[in-house]
Image (cartoon, rainbow, N blue to C red; front, side, top):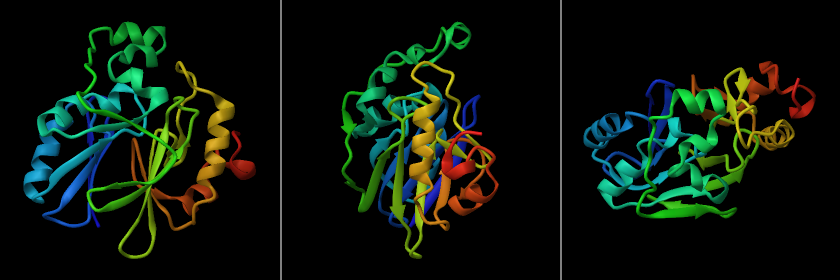
Length: 221
């Protein structure tokens, strides 16, 4: 499997391109602010054809370029129904102070939006399992794929980071919900490679052993 990742925008949100191999179709996960230039470069370098955009959640630092990229390539954007409104009204996902600071941010919903359900997706020759993981936002999701080497990848968005977890103090955040979602993530095998929405790659085993927010089987400290 080919995985290309890079941070984009002021918040350095990680965007990922996933494909079976070079020269194949790909999915683009969380194209945030300023991501298009990097996405276009990766598509050219690896001879990839985009098949879909996937959003782990609707915060604008993760979907800022979703409509631009999807509409340019005539592909759909997949997102949970709970976060769909954020594609066109990003300020609804921010508290008063952040909303004031980013009042100039304006987004338009992509032409083709499809709502994620609980079943797997078959896209770009990949089988992608979707787990609903509310807490950071009501529509947060984790995307899981089996790797060629026999392990598993989990794109966790802002639910789980290396050494930390997503904030729950923005509109729609819920500390109890994210605790339940983290317990779901802890059912993944320890060698599951975590590709988070911000920061470096980690594994479920490493986070189980060292993440201070995952004590007592996934509860909040």
